[in-house]
Length: 391
Image (cartoon, rainbow, N blue to C red):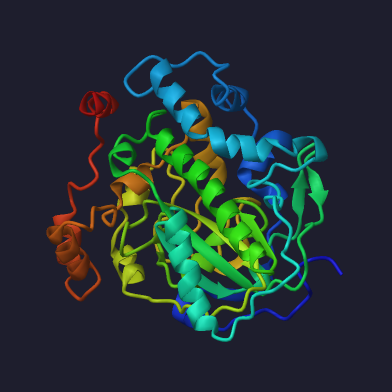
């Protein structure tokens, strides 16, 4: 039987997580992800697309201007290096690991299994080891088949291909990786893209090391980044944060300023639970991300089941972006854009007391006051100032 097994939808915790799945729900085929579509779908391809991908190999002429110099592109691309090495190592077999295929195991499952008498204690141990390897957040939830892609992508011809993941995996370990605040403040710029690339490289290393630890204990563990399944529902169910209008997970520790990775495993562990604190109510009255989006790809109004194109999952009531509009802007920039992350009122340094106070106000009945206080929050920092500060 193809993985995952054809079990009934697992809806436990949906209400607490704020997940609303309708009768029209369909599992998502990763071939329809907008970045994958850029390789095969003429409706997504444009004169800018080839230049966008070429810029990550330093094959495109850098744009002039602050944040888009050769030095900015050089740092961004260097930040991606470890992730690129991992993703390219089995490309000849049609697998772009971490993006269109799960990361292949580098160690065998130990023949002798460490017995787990206390799953809760094992969960605590996994979280400790995750942070030892460098993860900033870690939560654990059950394996929910609904969020697994219907198929992976064979990058040789961009066709659908079956997952080659072991069956019997019933848990998902979700890891959060903080993006550098000072770099995020310079979006949109190629320089800011170094914050994204650095965390992809970090997470590739961290998920591979944590998965190796679990395999050394005698259990299956499959490290995963953007591949195999949608990570946001798992992150929410694992209690790491709440879904927001900008399509991101808002965490109490870092706001939206994270990348997420995951590990599928059969290690006996205890599960975390969703922890709604009031982000949805704040996003109901805040449209800063939608207002700031240059191509108006983010939605106004309440969550809905409306989808702009095939790059959105069907049958989930939520805030959904127009991925085609979003990617078109990225392609023109020759870099990623996270203006919606930068301007988000939750994008703060919560080690500082006044930001923790703001968060308490934002998540309570005085949220409108918090919104007014955030009126000028998220102003773009000049990329040149980042270089000057580092110098």
